[in-house]
Amino acid sequence: MAERILIVEDEASVAEGVAYTLGQEGFEVAIAADGKAALEKFESWRPDLVILDLMLPRVSGWDLFAAFRKTREVPVIMLTARAEEPDRVAGLEMGADDYVTKPFSMRELVARVRAVLRRSAADDAEEIEGTMTKGGVVLDAEKHEATVSGRPVELSPKEFDLLAYLMRHAGRVRPRQEILAAVWGESEYVDERTVDVHVRWLRKKIEADPGNPQRIVTVRGVGYKFVDGE
Image (cartoon, rainbow, N blue to C red; front, side):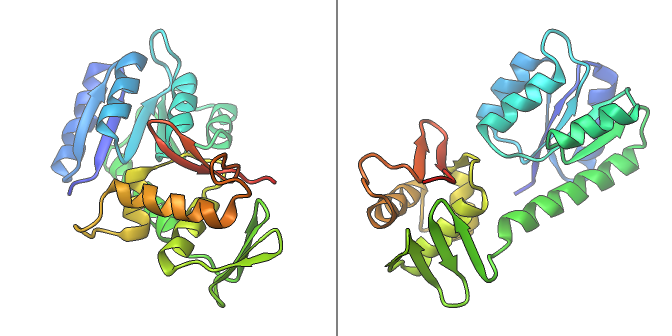
């Protein structure tokens, strides 16, 4: 399946040029000319990467970027005519994955898109090495053991992988579909309910009160988040 790229750009000639080039490179592309359209498309279409112009009408690119990141962690390349170093630094410190200034080479933009997507895929696929500790939970990858507040708990291989994935992304909401792809891969025999079932099992093992979870919390309509705190 082609990777989806959302272009948020109010300058039609730029948006259409980028869309055409990326389409020729095999990507599936959508364009949003303002913040409202961008948020709606982001929610309904679920892109794999966003190219975001910072100088948008009505809603600034900065505010839009913050809104995206509150929903799900998707790579973002900021696009702007402002080349001053403070703006570049501010964008990267906010968590943008790359920053491209106008005018730009389409060839360079495609290269940056591919590089960001590769990094994102590597981040999602990474496995823990050694020991990871968050929120009173300790995972030992080599021994495949888990403890909660010093108490050993027995986890199935998939429960361990799911917990490790959520802990790696602690504090960030992970949509069910993304969890499914990262933990179960491309299996055609599982669906999003599988995630819900495994989360329920995990809560019984790592939560003091599974009915009122404090570590793995549900973000209604989106997915789950691991909270790094007792």
